[in-house]
Length: 359
Length: 265
Picture: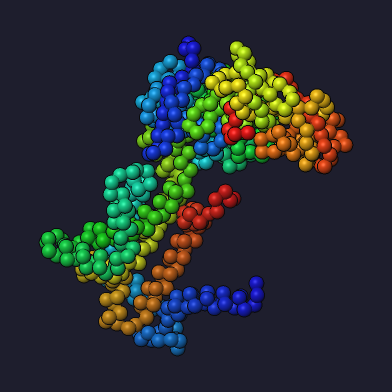
């Protein structure tokens, strides 16, 4: 068995003068669930279409299970794909939809029926074999599409924003379910989304993309706690950005002066900066708490109750854009109201990047 | 609905139905001159219409031409629509313009053109010429009908079939064409109706032997003014109505004509 389910080597795709993907390299291990996360137009869908074979790269190579498929047409790639609209064939029953890939492979009727039944059992659609796709709910349609993609035992499963057409209330449960089915099938998966919550909740690893490039690929914890650059820090999770100065670099650690406090940060993004250079410190709002020593303070503008937590927005001179946000437990936020001045203590370390504009 | 709007709608409906109603009434007039309203009643003009040899031959010719022309036009039109929608090639705009041209060129010009061409080249002016002429005339309607269905077809369905391992030919047979069926049926129906009622081009390219029913009717009224034409019209209207009712009952006319609301039912 190959050690890599999917490998992209420096894949570039251009549309006329626009480069949609710049030399992307990525590896997906067997059974691994990897998410391509980014805003629309970041190249994630192009990357997925290149892996599927709907498009051909201008440069670079694509390998599935160690075999180059760069010039192999879609229908010979052995991929399973779930589309945003599910793309279930409206003129076929659920069972016929699921059997389609088996029929195309010339698999005998008896075996095909067994495998269809098994796939439908796995996605909990047994008993709905004879329904038409339009007679299914959105969640059922999605599971039928998943069964159709998995029944052919693909080399890789491709999921193109499969939750975006569903009610928010349904999504959480289905995310857990899709992940469980994927794990049970043991199939390597490439998942495309613009929703950071989905990405953080579902992935073994996340590749954060912007402007046709993969900015960082790592576990959800790595991407969240140690973003590689300011785009990743700003796109994944919320951040309060404070203006500071570089105090110095010591090995892999940098010291950042923010007001009176000194925070530690990863030195890699700051290499080459001189002492005293302006930097931006990215703090996760849940790492801020009321009290001292005060890292920042400001007048509360709004208090937004979110159920499990409360988001407090304040005017803050030290913050980039003049605004800071703290995410507090409801108990700590009781009694807070607009107009009050709040002092917040911060963590001892943060992520820091060269300032975008002079402080 | 406001009362004046109701009256307006009724007037409009009456106005649309009036010619057909008048023709049907006149068909039962006993006198041998077209006149309205009739003074005495008879069904003898129906007997005459059904037994008159030119009408019988004309109806047979029209039926043959309609069936051949509509089937050929549907096949050609579907091919043209698929080519225009799926492929990028040089001269695509030209082909598009060419296929749609008969919409702006009057029918008698098309008829005149074919007549001149066949007369000059010495080719026989038989039924194939009529079929050819009708195919050209109805082609744009088929292309449009299929093209609209193609545009509303989710391209991801074809992508899904490809991703499941079906080569393009199989995808066309098992996914694209079955989903295009309503558009194809609608295009065929349009083509058949237009071909059966086509007159001005047929007048040019038909001969005494190959004249279609509308041409035979025209030749008849040039010589006689009796109500057998009205009787023929009445038969025509009732037959068409029955066919459309049947199509609606068994095929679902709204589906065939592609007027069904997407996602409805």
